[in-house]
Image 1 (cartoon, one colour):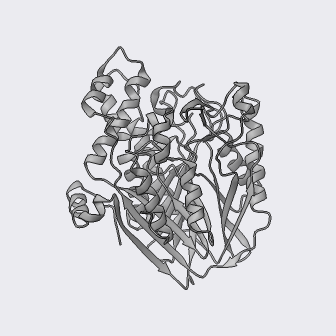
Image 2: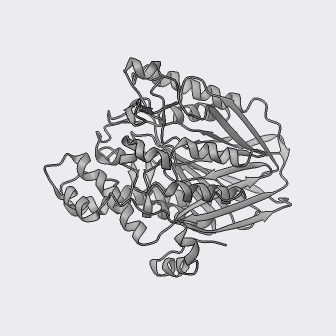
Image 3: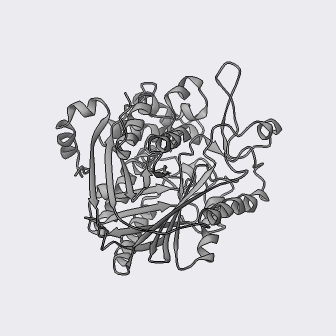
Length: 470
C-alpha cells in the first residue's frame, strides 16, 4: 500500500523508488477491497473546534474573534471491517494546510490504529474561522509584529480533542449493512465567480456576495447545481449521511463573529431533525463557485441561503433506497505538482518583512512560502477515494475549480461520484490549465504551475479506474 512516510529521509527514499512517476507528478495507486463487507461497522465522532476570543480568523487579515454566533465543529466517522480502519473527517475551518494537514491525519490515524494514508480530512471553508498552516505560523512568528495565522496551543488542543473523540468512537460502533444515494438540484445558491470579458480575460469576480446589479443579472455560468448525498444504514436505520455541494459557503464575514455560516447551519438544522444520524457536509470543487449572483451580503440572506441548502439536503434523501453493501474499496494516489515559477521565496520573504505592507500583504505570502518549502521537501499530496458498491467518494485537495468535479463524474458515468475538496489546502486555488491565461484573483493565488491540471485530472482518473488522460 502507498503510505505517506513520516520523515523527510523516508519521503525522499519513497519518491526515489518511483522516479519515472515522480517526473509525471503521479505516484502509484493503492487499493484495498473487502468484497464481502460482512463485518462492516462504524463509529462517529464530533468535537468543538471554535477558536478562543482574540484568535485570528481567515489567516489574520480580517477582524479576529470577538463573538461566537454559533460554534464550529469537526465531525467524522471511523469505518471498520474493510482491512485497516478508514477515517473521514470534515472541519468547520477555512483550511488546513501542509504540515498542519499531515498532523491532523497523523493524530486521527494513531487514535484509530490505522495508517495515515487511510485518513482524509477536509474543511467546509467558512471564513469567520481559523485558516491553519503551522508552517506559515512559524514564518510570521519570526517577524515578531504580525498577527497569528493559527495559535499553536489552540491547534494542539484540537488535535488532542480529535484523538479522544476517535478513540471514543471506536468503542461505540454500529453495523453498516446498506448504502443509499440521492441528489437534487439546489436553486438560487451557486454561481460561477469568474466573469469573462470580450477578450476572454476575467473582467470581474462575482464573489460570495455582491451588490452589483450586473452580477445578479448575468447567468450562473459553469456550476454543478446538484447536492449529492451518500448515506450508510444499519439495516433500515440511517446512521451516517454525507452531503456534497460545490460552493463557497460564506453569506458574509469579516465582522469577527464566528459562524459555521449557511452550509454549516443547514447541516446543524438537519442534525437537529435527525439526532439519531450523524450528518456531515462537504464542500465540493467550489474554488470558482460562490453565491454572488443570489447573495447581496446582507444579514437577512444568511437564513435564506441556509434554508435553500437545507431543502437540498432533505430533498436528496427523500427517495433513498438502501442497498446491501457488497464491496468496499479504499484507493489512494499521491501527486507532486510543481510550484509556479512566478513565486520566488527570497522576494516573498522580503515582502513579509516589509513593515510598510498591509497585514494581508505580509501574512498571505507566508502561505506561498510554506507551499514552496513543502514542495521542495517532496511531501506529496494524497488523493483518496472510498468506493462502496457503485458510490465513489473522492477526496481532493484545496480550492479545486468545479471543472474537476464535472470531469470526475464524466469519467465514471455508471457510478454515483461525490467530490469532497478542501482537503490538504497547501496549493491554495487549483484552477484549470485554461483558466491561468484568463487571469483573475484565483489564478493570482494559485501556487502550482498549470501542469497541476493534467496531474490532478490523471490522479482522479486513476482513483476511478478510468483511462489516464494523455
